[in-house]
Each structure stands twice: as structure tokens, then as C-alpha cells.
Length: 315
Image 1 (cartoon, rainbow, N blue to C red):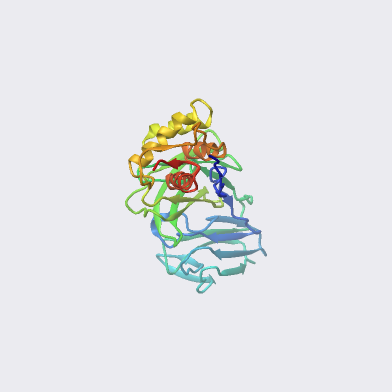
Image 2 (cartoon, rainbow, N blue to C red; image 1 turned 120 degrees about the horizontal axis):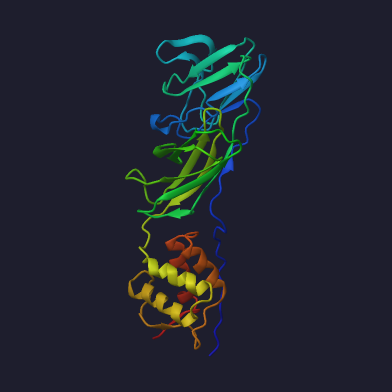
């Protein structure tokens, strides 16, 4: 009996999610996603910027809410030296500073948002410190912890890295802080709470000190994932690395069918007469065992193998 294998193109991430660094223009301050929520912790990036008299600073609103940039303090009010008016999402505001001094500013709509522009003061100008960050996985299930690692472009002893997580609407769901005590590298953990919604995409944000710029990374919090026993991933890894046979791995597929994780009219199956599974499946088994693709992605592939005839269910 001949078997015809139809390989459906499957698109998976080939690496863990790595952050992208916002490309900052000269003297640009970004209002980040989630700035309108007080628990975020970072509201202007960089929070402190050093310029010379005659320089222009541009604020860019990357948040989903409207903001202002107004000199003064929340307690005393605006002082009239600079007032942007409303900056809508996606909008910008620019101001040229001709007079030497320290300009503290805040958002009239969200007064916990504060920042500072140092213009030609005695302090030497300092370039914003950038970060690169990465997460240990692309997909996370309820109960998983999220490990975030990163490196700063410049080491500042005991400087604080502020990390916060928002949904795509800018709602904050978690935050954390970690210091760079002896190295420009750092690692910390976020534990999802009841604010996290399955099926949502979330943005990891990180800033290094007051003069740092923001790095971001996206993750997916999975909906309705089948709960896979740890031994099943171990088995997938052993098979992908050639330590067990196709037939042994096939018993794991049988387990998926018996437990109802894969739809099938029968619970007994064979994988052609020699228990042969196409080698390309090993790639996705390895990715799944490493957490680089989701449970649902792997189960969907197994389902495809059955429906396409690569795995046959006995009548």
C-alpha cells in the first residue's frame, strides 16, 4: 500500500523572542505604552535627558492614551515655561530650550508622570543607556513564570532596571525591578497574576535608570492550552535527538489520542508499516519540548498528521 505524505507548511518561531530597541532620534523622549497607569513605573523615556542651550527635544506618544508635557510640578501646577497641550496617541511635540536650567515637567492628565530636561547645566551630558532583552519562551501557559534576561550598553553599578508588562491596550498587568550590581547583565522573573487574560498578547518593557531608553519584547499568554505532562515533552526531546525510536514516540501520540487531546474516532493507530514518522516532524517536536512553540501548535500538527494520512487510525 502506498502512502502519500502531504507536508503542510508550518510556520514557527525559530528562536526565543528577542527585544527590539526603539530607534531614538536625537533628543527624543518616548511616552511608552502603559504610561497612563500609575503602577507602570516609567512614564517618559529617558526620564532625564541632558541637552545644550538651543537644542530641541521631541516627545513622541507611543501610548494608547492622550498626554501632555507641561513644566512645573503636580503640587504647584504649571509654571508656563513649556506646555504641549494635548498629545494624542501617535502624536509628537517639540520644544527648543534656549535658556540654561533644569526643567521639571509632568502630564496634566496623569500627574504621576514626571520627567526632567537638564539644559546646559554643570553636569556633563550623558548619553541614554540602551538595553537588549529576551524572554525564555515565546508562549506561556497559566502557571508558567516568565524569565527575562538582558544586557545594558553601559554598566552603572547598582543601577535599577525597571520592568513592566502591558497588554496591547496599555493596561499594566505586572512590574518588577532588578539592579545591576556587578555586571551590565541582569535576569529577573515575572509571575503572571489574575490580571493576565488567556489568548492575549503582552509587551515586556524595560528601562535602565532614569537616563535609559526602553527595550520591548512581545509574548503570548496562551488560551485553553491542553495540560501536557512533563514526561511527554521529555519523550519528544529524546525522539527528536535520536535517543528513542519512532515506534516508542508513537506511543506518546497514542496517549494524546486516548486523553482526548487529539480528535480521533479510534484510539489505536499505526504509523505506516514500519512506524515511520517523517523526519521534519522531529523539528517541531524539539521546538515544542523546548517551549519554542505552544502546546496547541504541537497538538494541531499531530492532528494534521492523522487527517493527512501520515498517521493512520485503524478502522
